[in-house]
Image (cartoon, rainbow, N blue to C red; front, side, top):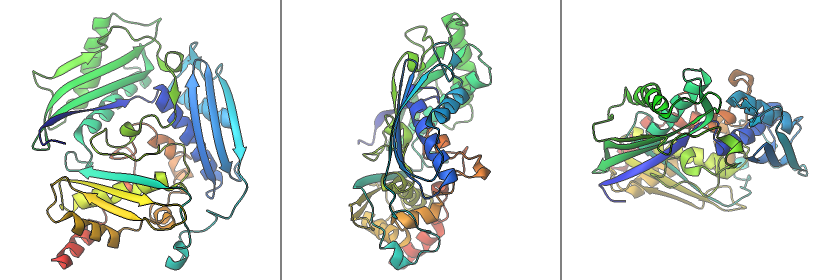
Length: 403
């Protein structure tokens, strides 16, 4: 990537079909873990006109009503019109109950270091974690702004500030960079879906969305809209109904949106729909945790942590760091610090973040479902353990010993 460039990142509302699928898949994960923390599960979803299809493989003691879980998600998002709603859509399932095995039936909080070394991962994975100093939450500015604006659009629908809006919508924000730092807002493109019976004139929609969504989202930003920022609201005219009745959805389709908006690499595999025994999900959380603490410690302006796992081994076969030339010390020294301070073994990650117990009653029985929209990283509306910067002082202390 050049030092001077323009990057666009996209976010969508909770009612977008792909995100509807992610939320259904993660609601299934939440439901199973709430009853049985030792659950092994992978759940995927596809939606189209009047149809929800769920495919899941699981080993759990939990009582599962997949159709009811899906309908609750659909209802909460606000799909209650004739075109698509929780009452009349067909829910089709393809379920496979896995043979019970002891893998995962351990208490990571009481395991010894030697016992953790005996727990090998069950799938190959190369995952990435990233952080930078562009925003308070240490994620790239384009995806930060896209998520923030998309959330405003969704809230305008849910709280009826703009009562003609439908649940579906999308936002794209373009940011110009100079010397690898955000310089100005190049463009904002917003697609707001409307209900057919309540559709306003297009100019009314554009004016109201500009004021209540875009201007509100950018009001407190350090880099704001200027007189050259290109703003397009429903540039092709009315976007009516939207949702699964207009375009299909699939779990795991929005990987860049779930991670860093295309600014940095994301992992090969999707995050949503997988229980915490899947290293391709939870390893990405640990990699983000390491990268964020490196930035919080001031060792670089940008940091990407790449971790590779192989089936049959407990520890990663490779940990690599790339600071894109912004490091205050050598990338190899940062790698050494990460390897000494961060434990990437599966049981250690489960223990560090308490991942099997987060969908608890304190969180309303829902945790992973909330992650499934508006990103898994850089969230300010959720207390995410991998977003903590509690390793900063240890990193600085170890850096001093490397000199």
